[in-house]
Image (cartoon, rainbow, N blue to C red):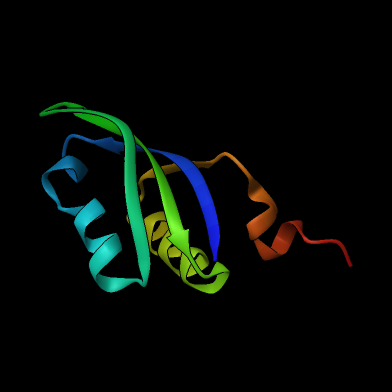
Length: 84
């Protein structure tokens, strides 16, 4: 199992969607919300994803397709950052 901490920043339109719930439902990851602040104008969530490397990669790839700003704390789980 792997863990990835990340900051997710969402716009006013994006906070209307249950994206944190969807991460846990559609991907085999556990979402641990460390800190969050959302208003009707937008907001952020600092979360930790627990799961296999592959599922965490799939979940973050989906988040990126939504247009949210994703800032991983540790980029070593992403293939483009592996040596070789």
